[in-house]
Image 1 (cartoon, one colour):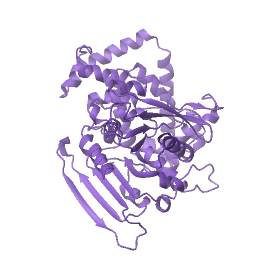
Image 2 (cartoon, one colour):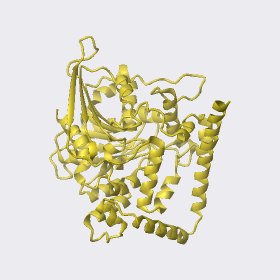
Image 3 (cartoon, rainbow, N blue to C red):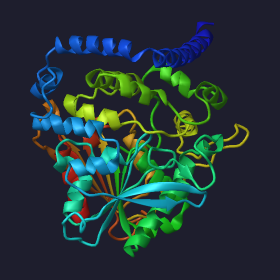
Image 4 (cartoon, helix red, strand yellow):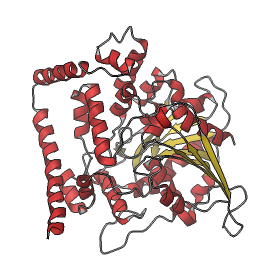
Length: 467
C-alpha cells in the first residue's frame, strides 16, 4: 500500500515545488527596487564574511575597483556582455553574423570567426560548433583566459570557425511568418533541430566557403542533434570530415533527485499545464538580473547538484560568474518533454505524439558512415552512459581509448591508451577510427569551462584535427 502511495506523494510534491517557484517569482517581480537593493546588500555582507582559498574570488567579494583590477575588470565585462560579438571583441576577435533560413521558415543566426579578418592565414578547413540544450553560441567563448576558448585557438590556426544557434534561442527567435508570441512558433523538439536546423546550417556554411566538407564539434545536445540528423539524412555523412563529441548525451540515465525524476515521469499534458507550451523557465532571466553574482552562482551550483548530482568543483568560482550568467537561453517546453520521453524509454527516439503509436528510434548504429570520431566525456558525468553511447555508435575498425587522471585537480596529465584492433568481420572500411577520451572526476560542464580543459579537451581536439 505504501509503495502505491509514495509515487503519488512525490508527484504532488513536485507539482507543489513548481507552483511555489512560480509564485515566488511572481511576488518578487512586484517588489520595489529599493527593497530588492536592501536584500542584495545583505547578501553581499554575508558573502564577505566568508573568505575562501581563492584570492581572486576574495578580491571580488571585497568589491575591488574593477577599473584598476585588470583581470576582474575583464571578468566583469565578459559577465555583463550582451552579445556574442561583444564577447569576442573583449577577447580581441572580430565576429560576423549570418542568417540561415530553414525549410520550415525559421531564421537562425550563425556566428563566424573568419581567420583572414582576424589577421590569421586561412588553412582552408572549416569547423562548425553546436551548443547544447538551453544554451546558445556564447558558451564556447566564455573562458576568461582567451587561449582556453577552443574557437579562438582554431581561428588562430587558420580554421574558418562557425558557431550555430538552435531555433528559439536568443539569436534565433525569428520566423518568416510566425511570431514568438504564437504557440506554433514553440512547437518544436529535438526532431526539428535534427531535421531542419543542422542540415540548413551545414549547407549554408559549405555554400559560403565553396567547400564540400566541414568538421563538426558538438557539446551535449549538440552531439545528439548531429547524430540524429546524420542517421536520417544520408547525404550529411559526406559533408562531415571529422566529428568531435564533447559530453555527448543521447540517452541519459535517470536524474539524480527523486523529485525531479517524478517530473520526468509526468504525462506531457501535465508538464504543458505547469509550464505552458512556449518558452521554458523564463524566470531564470529574471533571477539573473536581480541576483548578486556570487549568490547566483551558488544557486546554479545547488540546482545542478539537485538535478544531476554535479559538484562543480572543477570550474573556478570566479569563472562561474561569467559562465553561469550566459548559461541559459530560451527553448521550447516541448524540447524538454522530448528529453523526458527519451529518459523514460531509454531509447534515443523521436518525439512521441501519442502513446497509441511507438516512437521512431534514430538509427545511429546503422546509418552513420563517418570515418573519424573523437568522443570526450567526463567520467563523473551523470548524463553520459558511455557504454550505451558506444553501443549506439557504428562499429569501427580501430578504437583508441584514453583515460586522463585528474586527481586533486592538478594539471599533470596521466594517459592510458588501449588500442583494440577489431576483427575483420566488422562492417568497416579502411581508416575508420573512434577515439574515446574519458576524464576522471570531470562532469558535464567541466569540459567547456573546467580549469584544465587546455589539457583534457583543447589539446586532444587539436591533435585529432591535425591527424
